[in-house]
Image (cartoon, rainbow, N blue to C red; front, side):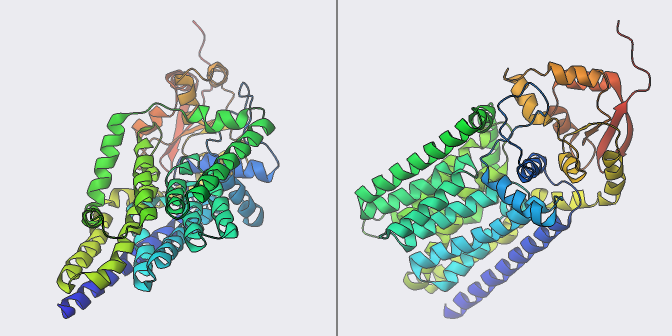
Length: 486
């Protein structure tokens, strides 16, 4: 059994090396890519450029151009703006911040496990396992807010564990959790709830004061930003985010996530059964974090959401299994330990294989890079303003204005929160030199159609004609003959 235990550990180590290696190869490809890798990168890169130029991103008046929405609090675009000042605004500017934040998440998880168990191997396995999840491999290097918010929240948990009886330590935890919320507002639930539960077990009064201070900090910060922007911050981060919720989407995404993480879920359930024993010590901070992460993940049903809503839940499962691994070393028979280690090892090839539809997307987009210089030349030299959906980052790289975020304003128009008449009439008048619509493989024509309102589509077909397809993107320009009005 001892030999079997050693072999199982070696297999687990080999699987982790393969998974982590895959992450670094994938992240390297993302950082080198000279093409947008996600629709959401464009708006955030544009916001970072505006902040670098001293321009407001939470505009209260959306009756005139530019029609842009800043759906998230300001810390991520602020971080990207700092990097942009240092290295310029390119496709990789936001990805650098996200890739570093992903590594900070991995290290933070390892530190949490070590703080709770003093087991170096369990800590290392936890940090490495995080980098092996397809959601992390795919989303980690994208220029999106999620990994920075997750990193702040994990380090907030660690600080509360490291200095639970120190005002300075709790102050540091509070700052990290506030930073997470002001990076992405959905990070208000899981990590703060876990920290408050952990503090409450030791000192209820301290937990109450911590929760009160956190709440006051969020309300004060949000109130100040709302006041400074004449209500723009509240509209952008709350009103414009209140999209339609689809239960069918929750079921579909969660079913895929459960299948993708089946071996890990088996281990979580194994450990959960162990904690039903009332006489064993329970890692409440990890348990509450898992529950909060799962509840937060249910908001994936909101229109426009994707697998990034499941990152906290994924991190929490890895955290609980990492803590369990330290216990398994000491308390369970070698044969059972071997089976559990092999199950954990199986998670990595299982999830990499089933998640390849996500991870292959960067490679598919990189295959289009040879056509990007021609597309860049067309956009950078266009004699007038340009509209784009997936290629919004290209507008920033060319130093052009992003005048419309089509998908966000399509949702606002559908919900009666924005009048699209000005944009539709300008399209009909041919006021845009080019319109870029990414609707050819590897992009989805169905997704592209869903990003513009029916009225915008009708105006484009009426007044514009496709002139070429480059990097999966159809380039439209005004027709030479203006159609006569009937």
